[in-house]
Length: 238
Image (cartoon, rainbow, N blue to C red):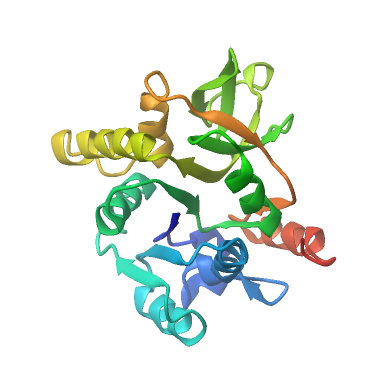
């Protein structure tokens, strides 16, 4: 299994910390978010890891090279005008065919999250914090046992829960997702959309299931989030 980590963003709401480092290298209790995600993958036997960098790519390459020399880093030079769908498209072209895990590099979570996703019998899945509704997070709607919608705009009464931005794609799911990203980016010339827009579009043709969250997580967008994450993960990590 391969893993693709989307880490091209600015992290402007975490300034001045992000004046000199990319958002994914912001530390939670001394550990960069990106390093925690890589450790989670390695702990679960996933060693084929690719990171899409952008903002402060040189800093990311240098820091990753010190600790994780086998992690591949590809640079999106268009990060200023694009969004993470572009990073996903760019990344999938680099990693080639086959199934993979994908995650955004601004979520700090336990290694048990990856274990549960790998153990989950469904080949295409979204890790969902079932019963939780976060305004800033992508929410999902489930119908007849499958996810039928993913969006930030889903109403609380309709939501199964919040996505934690960790996904598993089968080879079939990966092809459908990549094709939809290609349609937006190369055909329609729309490069600034969330990857979940493309994912939402393929839910009618590809069966995605909700993998129940097993562990802690926190999406870190601003200083308040960082403080909350440090409090949540102040005890021993799982």
